[in-house]
Length: 203
Image (cartoon, rainbow, N blue to C red; front, top):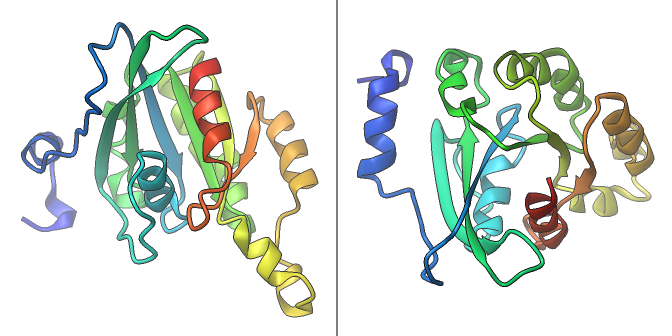
């Protein structure tokens, strides 16, 4: 079966057979929060999520169709642990009919873009949020700027700075779309991961 002919049924089987649910053995969780991750393909979502899931950074991560991570974290200031199920969705157009099945009962969305790809930010307003809100009109979302290490590397390089999205602009954009927060991350250096975990607890 090719990618073009993959079906909802086969995606579900693939998730189970490959063992993509990973649980941290830290006691029986008392609650569960479902988080979906959306955004253009090739902006760094998969690498970001693997670091968030305490895996090593892999610069050569391949785009996923759908992948899920299940781990235990404190969901409040108490010591009680809760499960956070994070769904990494495909950003490619040909999987648009499959994505909505993962939006069901989502408690939070992480809406991602790459800081040196303005089109990936534009697509959040024009494509990703309208699609998500169609199925989850009342679910909160957080804007995530990925590969923030590129900004530091581009300083002083006039050829690159013109395409780098500033933090100030991204914060203004986040406010304009009604995001609960804006967080910048670098999977390569694990920057911003703690702030994302805090957002998972708070929203």
